[in-house]
Picture 1 (cartoon, helix red, strand yellow):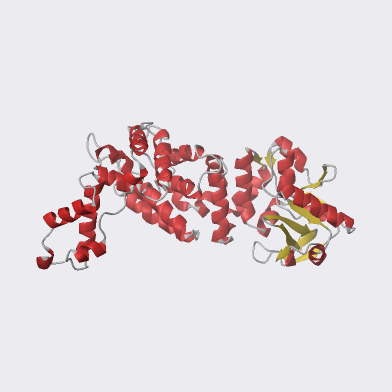
Picture 2 (cartoon, rainbow, N blue to C red; picture 1 turned 90 degrees about the vertical axis):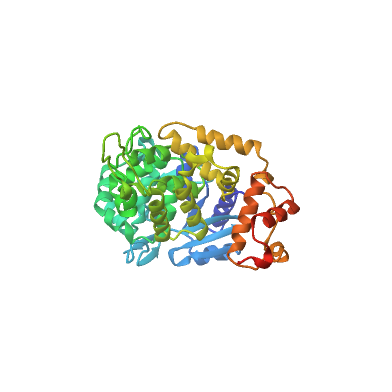
Length: 446
């Protein structure tokens, strides 16, 4: 069953049992905008216990806050009881909730007017207690009620305002904007995981440049990613970067990220030059230029720290660091030995490395010669040519009389280089090469 079908059937069953039942929040907003909602949420005056009695296939994911998830195979819909939130002890959760029979009372605790709309699925009638339809028409993000109170209740809402404004191309209403600027230093009270997920959405929803411009304008950027904020005003050599400083270059790359881009590539784009502010060196003699010596190595360390801070998975953190660490290697690909180029192309998710390089070029000098070189190389080289099966392994070396030790890696890499360069093709070729290039086993010092 599709999400909308499940949501409609939930509403019908709740009404049959004598309850109110309405679509709420983002799905209503998206339907008004003519977008297909990613998911559907239902609001009702049924208590969480009442919802679970009606739907055996359900989970109490937030029953204390009135939220039950109703399941149908892999499809799920959140069903929330109308409520009022009282107080906010931790800047996210209310101190207590009071369930209600009033949909208007429920709406007034929500974040933004465009997310405070309700819809009767039977006839499509919109219930709008907060002016959400007018703000959609005016293309405005406006907090419901007092913006400072809404943001004090959940500090993440400040970042969500930025994301929604960027995603829909809306402006943030002045009082809401001013409240974000005032409360921006409190954003770090939010858990790192929630901040990471919100930033990742900004980077992958197709409006990353506008999102980061708004983060900067609201003061959130220096609180969330001070390392990125330091890119502003850091000049670059105009012969390679006619577009301007490091911040401008990064924004141009973010602008080119489409919706649905892999999250690691998006973070790699954001952080690929993160080491430049700390390594900036102005010209020191005639005909010299601006330099960023070791900015890649410094950038990797900074990126790793950011990934730790936001509690990235190990796999994602490794990929982001690899994207930062390898982005300058593309300038050398035309001069690389075949073995070096093939090893480079074997990096995990190499397509992300290649795409980052393309965006890097298009957002600076515009020269795609190295990109085209690699694309042509990959097109004419079969996968087994890039990653052929090993001709020898450690067991083979032991059979040849070599003793396990540090020399093993050197020998195996030497053999693999020869294989990748086409100088050997069979295990027998490999054994002969080892016997010729390395000391006989019985006299080898391994």
